[in-house]
Image (cartoon, rainbow, N blue to C red):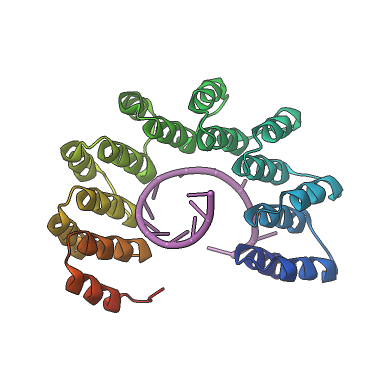
Length: 248
RNA sequence: UCUUUUGUCUAAGC
């Protein structure tokens, strides 16, 4: 059953909705996870009606069902629908709250997100990161900095959000300082810093980072190639392209 | 490594 559920999610993730439906229909047994995976999959593929239908028809619901609905409805822009699920559900957890905050931010309602954040019974690092990202998005960098300073614990995403905030504000020096202060850097942090230099036409520095970073992913390669292109270094761009581990 | 929430690039679409 586990492996079938996993397969079903894979189908959905790859846009193979028919295959997923077919598998769902043929499964001898279905667990709550099966239903949740179907709902999630329909949202991922933009099939709102069927997601709602499955939610209505499922034999029972757990916290994952509710949270999946909140996040899916929010991603489809149905803020009211998400609010309704959130208000009617029982046993809200931190993910439920975070999903609402994330939804508000993505629907341009950052003030609502902040309001909800302050009403949360329990906050985790994701809650803080979401609000910071929202503030950065509306160019309230100093507010974001306040949150960054006040939060009880910061992870690599928190730092990267601040880093991005400085870059969006054109404060490349502060950005670099933030980058250097990061206790740990993952590939996304390196990528973010690289983009910052590329957008400020400092492609040589970005190139240096590219060579220095411990691991590179697809974004790293895309960024450095675009960086070369942006300053007319077409030969270098093509050389990088051909050196990519897997072209796409 | 069965299903839900946060940070980076590109492409497509609008």
